[in-house]
Image 1 (cartoon, rainbow, N blue to C red):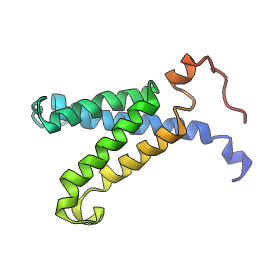
Image 2: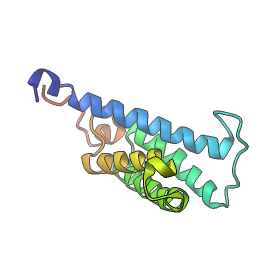
Image 3: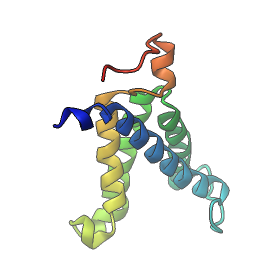
Image 4: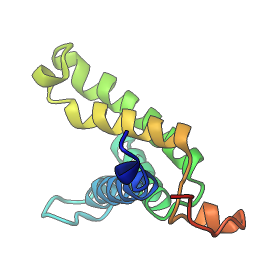
Length: 135
């Protein structure tokens, strides 16, 4: 990769982590609180309610970079379960069963789990590694 572009990779990853975390948390807030949007909140003591809790809390943790690997691992598994329970019965291919978001979230969270929190994260600050990556 061109070194003039590669130096931005840690920051691009941080933006990916933050944006995906916020979007995932919004899925959870829709299930738990009915916002954003106008859907009624789901029952907490249901499978969808538990998914909403994982999505909301996990999304926030991933976005701020706190307990990032743990949250990303749980979120990835949740999306795998969601795909196989809600989408796969409608057809094997994600393009047919409308499971593309679940598959993408699953693999993005798996990548975040493997990569770690990166820059702009509370995990990094708690480790005492406050310096920016070498450019």
